[in-house]
Length: 354
Image 1 (cartoon, one colour):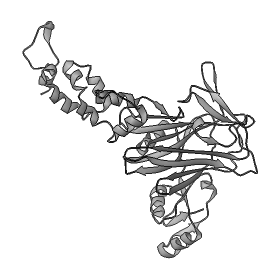
Image 2: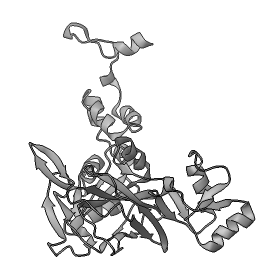
Image 3: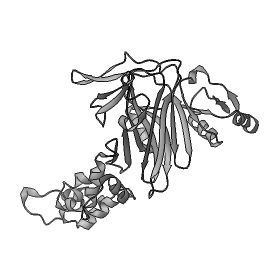
Image 4: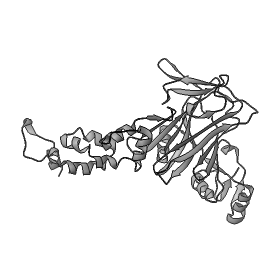
């Protein structure tokens, strides 16, 4: 079988061969095969011969790669497109970073998966004190998709808010703030970071909040403690069930303890990715995701102890810097056990609550 398959590629001495070759396959047959491949693989095979090149332009191949609500996305992102524009061209255009909302937001399809990704620039967020140069500055940089970041020199009341309304396809999405401790600049042809003005972030954690359609709300807290590198700080997740209508989300990042100042922080953007991308960010070392600890009401703590026999403890120093996620339902207990069971300081039926 291997020899027969190899023969498909061999034509000796440039002479014509009566043996079958890949170029003899019907385009419809080739298209039916390659539609099961990822878009980058399809484009590579298109260079193999004319049959594969023609098959790679088949509309039904690329319609299977486009989001189900791509007609709405095209209208929202691209505006007018020619009616005879092929599905491959539509996919290509949607994969480019397309700006909207006055250039403050960019959206694109991930080339391999077709997942919708979005980025909101610092100029598209509502930042307390942004117009006062004593507190904030806009710094040009190549380390941002928007070629500009907001740099916090020093402030007492730190608050950043944002919102977006967009027709996301069905799925689960994760929201992140892209931050760096230390002033970003360039030296000797590469990016460098000056941590001299970094202060105040290790005293109290930053609170991240996310509001989504249906009055769903999540809160988490995390200490910023590693300078000199861009990290994605996870705000929360949201689900989309109706792709035909726009999903509206609101988000915030605050540290409003006015007993001390905070400074030396670079704010690039807010990014929204399909939740499956979290593992990719973690693998690349770009994700800051401390382990969660549940916050709940006194009544819920008593319910835990009386109904399920859980022993409730106060946080120990070992988990002082962990993220703190707010939940008010019994399902939080199950999630907490599943996430934290691998850590030695969580013994069986012992839950640490704040």
